Length: 515
Ligand SMILES: CCCCCCCCCCCCCCCCCCCCCCCCCCCC(=O)SCCNC(=O)CCNC(=O)[C@H](O)C(C)(C)COP(=O)(O)OP(=O)(O)OC[C@H]1O[C@@H](n2cnc3c(N)ncnc32)[C@H](O)[C@@H]1OP(=O)(O)O
Ligand SMILES: NC(=O)C1=CN([C@@H]2O[C@H](COP(=O)(O)OP(=O)(O)OC[C@H]3O[C@@H](n4cnc5c(N)ncnc54)[C@H](OP(=O)(O)O)[C@@H]3O)[C@@H](O)[C@H]2O)C=CC1
Image (cartoon, rainbow, N blue to C red; front, side, top):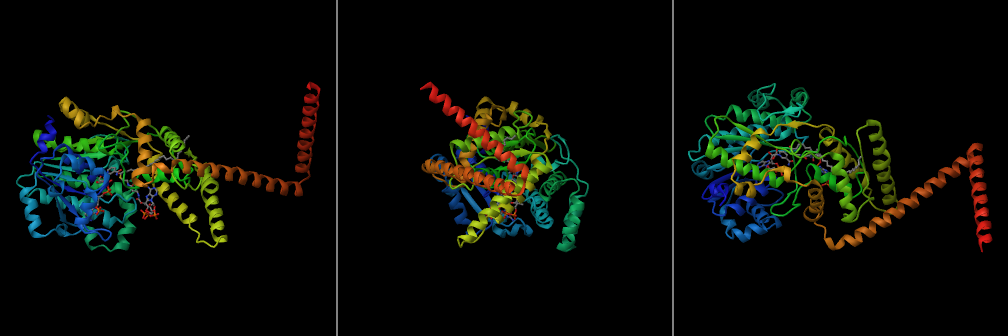
């Protein structure tokens, strides 16, 4: 019997960000391995015209939860969705709900955050810093609380090259920033933001660093741990390989590459691609929850959930495998054939952007205009290039994350727990993982049917023929223009034609002789 699974039995667990990528996989694993848990409270806001109940219904009826329904048929009775908006005072939770949360919660997993790189400083601080402080305040009033697990990011200190499992101080106190945002107006805040974030690449990583500092400062006598995942990718094994449901991080770029929009990336091929499967992160979270509650370490422990130092993969290997998978399993209705290059050189990158991205988009938009349709490709292309440029910082650098605490925890687990809550990334086979990942993007994110693969392959063949035809036509036009204008080009042309003629005459003569 798994000790960790048994630990969560009978527990009341509070999860923020349960409707997000990580939150959903966390809930799934909890229900599957500890079906006898008491209740999972989730803090949810209505979104996109859906009520809380509709959102929960949709999650429970998704493919991700198919196995859970077999193991825990009354799963819907064990989820209690509580109306909450983490950017509001007291999270806008009703008095009765707050009372229940305060008196019953045993474990907290704080996953909610804004993960947008370009959010406003005000909103990112509200969510990634102030909300964390508020939740810690709530936690301090929970008599039954055993552990508070805060999810940060491995990139919260990406201004450093070597990152240890410790909380680093930020140049400006989070409290000072929170206070000043109360009276500064939005225009001034956006003006001072670049000065505040200094050598952090974006508001997201900066506010996640502030969030960690808040955890350290407001920890009181709570049992707290921080988990720092790197780039969270599709599931590796559980509940099935390749599950993914949003376009963050690599996912959007994989789609853009598969559809033939993105054919070059400014990336350093040898830089470490520090991806970590979402189920590995979740297994670590659950193990940390157990360890923090049962062993009560004296200080707040930080755990890195990264792959680079234990089982490194670089962008070259990843890119090649992504393309190899698209050869076997192409995406439907591609714009161009998937083909791409990683370049770390500015000039080459700009050249590829002009030739491989912008020019085809403009040509296609001209074609749409000529056929009476609305041009849209330039807009799509600009959006993709903007996203790629936002991720560039992470594609051109490598970091070293130490993993002493994570390895220590692994050694503390029983063999059964090491199997059920496996977070040993050394066992990951990258080629297999990436293939399943790409397949998952096609099936679960784009909802493409596997029966459409022969047609998708046929479509790629047509695109290849169009490509050859276009290049030949372009060559002939350029050549024709050159011949009309330059004597040298004419001389070269006559030389080639007479050479071919002589070659053909010789070939015909020698074949006649043989007969
Ligand atoms: C030698 C070489 C040989 C071989 C070469 C082979 C080459 C193969 C080439 C390609 C193969 C691809 C291989 C995979 C490479 C993967 C690289 C992945 C890098 C990832 C680095 C991530 C680092 C993360 C570090 C931190 C990790 C974290 O802690 S957390 C979370 C990460 N957060 C995010 O990812 C959020 C990022 N997104 C944003 O901040 C915003 O979306 C934005 C600023 C990028 C855009 O904002 P905007 O308001 O303009 O747009 P939005 O409304 O959000 O969306 C508009 C449309 O854009 C689409 N979109 C959004 N995000 C992406 C995306 N990531 N990729 C693609 N498209 C995206 C979105 O769908 C919208 O579309 P429409 O709805 O149609 O308008
Ligand atoms: N994905 C990644 O690559 C990585 C993620 N992380 C960290 O993991 C955690 C989870 O990330 P991930 O699941 O990918 O992110 P998602 O964007 O998928 O999920 C974010 C969650 O936060 C919730 N949320 C956001 N704003 C509010 C609000 N005002 N009130 C209530 N809930 C809100 C969202 O709810 P709603 O559905 O209503 O929007 C959603 O459930 C984050 O802390 C992130 O920093 C760390 C490293 C990498």
